[in-house]
Image (cartoon, rainbow, N blue to C red; front, side):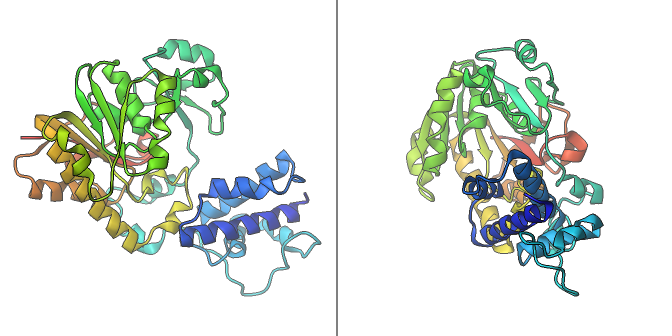
Length: 392
């Protein structure tokens, strides 16, 4: 493919990403993979160049662009050499027209910038769009850090988490023996700190209320050393169905329960007031994961955020009903918005008398209300709010 043809491919992919963001369609990675699946003429160098161009345009545009062409044109402000790609070649984009719309550079839509935690300055927000490294969690049910480092000589200890290793961005580990045999899991260090906040120990009863595909459940299983009872729950059948295979590979014993939205307690009533710890890794805006999913900024709306905040409050109350007296509830969101973090916990305390917060068992992050906030710039992790609450 010629450089102009690569630019045209990037525009076509960006068009699909813009539509998907507007209509809750597939993620950008899926769109890119599907696009090239039907275009076998594109070599590996072509695919890599187009992908880099697409993600540069996505990261550049804070507001959702009207179309892919406007998104790509927005890059010209900082990469003027891209003008050469718009010279009306046979397979390239149409020639530039005076006054046509170009996406402005920005971190996020204007309405959303007002919702961020007050401690996030401009440099902190900009870091949300940098490329993320690849973190591994060493599965102590099958390995130790030293043996895994011997298998990955390029790995370095990741900050803050005791069983985390960091590899360069883009490293492929899925086909390695360590991954296939369950000695490692791919997991951001921030997510590993959420598991650390649960203080898992052998013999306890633990509930992962929003387990998804079970990454944090697997971390809890390792902390519990196969002793006790661990129950992973979710309302998404597809995601939860992936956990048994992952657990078998990791050598972990985890129960799963599929929940019916708004009727969750009926499936969990036998656990009422018994759990030593309940983890609520709640559905959220995902503002802390923009390094991995920068197009997520274009998907969020004030209405969707409001629904998420309501759901988070519901899940906190559900979790509280499961915790034994003196037990713990760990609340986490991969968000840096006040309404999903510190203010959400303040509202919980107003509804639930006698609950208190505990200091988290790590030094990473900064105090943010009753919890701590992790950010890419300050901590080298995805962005998270984490709080550990104690039942009266």
